[in-house]
Length: 171
Ligand code: 4NP
Image 1: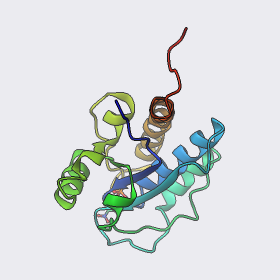
Image 2: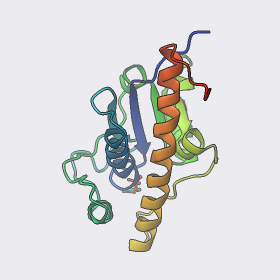
Image 3: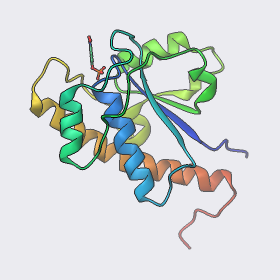
């Protein structure tokens, strides 16, 4: 059986200023902490383009900074058609994002689109949009993303070792 390795991940939400910049920034750190780093292309985008060119929301920047993660250098952008060929894995933060992404994807690329928490942890839940909420909502989103990032890293490592033919058993 041949399994295609995952070498690139795009994190997607609606505005690309609250959730997906956190998902990208936290995963980048978690992946690097596991001794990985430049072997994975990581980016984030929004299904909407209202905030294109902007920094992440100041509340996302703040909650990330509290945990030592700097996402202030990111800039929002809208999902582009070429993302569906460029990225092996496209993770929507909520079901509406997944529905919108699948509508944009060609039939061949649709299988690359997944619900973020479902793919990472097996729990088919949304990362709720915190945009109209307060700091506690951003803290809660951060916690969900931190936990999911660890699970996602484990899953991607497992897929990398399977696809390179390394034994993944525990003997
Ligand atoms: P995000 O949050 O999708 O997590 O970036 C939002 C940001 C902006 C808007 C909605 C959600 N907005 O409507 O402008």
